[in-house]
Length: 191
Image (tube, rainbow, N blue to C red; front, side, top):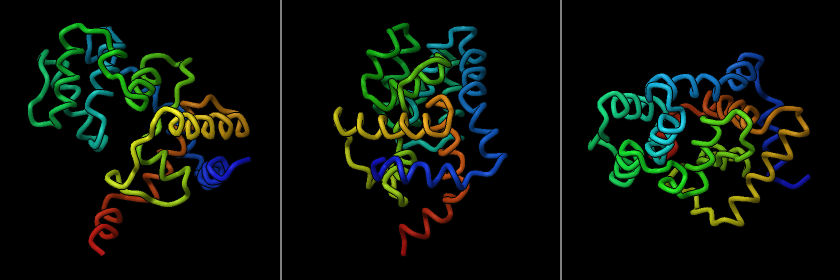
């Protein structure tokens, strides 16, 4: 077991029953929203949610995706590249080639396909694996091989815990966010 797996398992072993339960249904609940907001087109909904996700907190991500899907055009009050990708998906381009990056393609896939084995490595998943909080701006660009090493660690840890990898990643994400609230992020950044 490598250090990443050890750190991920440490976070898992600290989860409450409520966090496990929330994580078990996190992608199912998000899939339901994506399907509803995109009038039954789960991939379009998942793609728009994933397009807005880089450097965007979750409530804001949902707000941007919901209004864009309802209106049929991307919001301009989002990060420029995120909005451009969202608009391309809204215009009917295939989701995964538009998203292109490993994090956003994995995220859209986990939302749209409950059987997806792709692992979403965002700044929280990265922090969990390295064993300490890293701000989004401090997470290095994960090239393909390095991203794969983090994804493999989550896959191994999920297997040890007996869960599908997307459910397991969501569980640890929920627990990590509960233990590292935004106010703590801000005070650490200032201090």
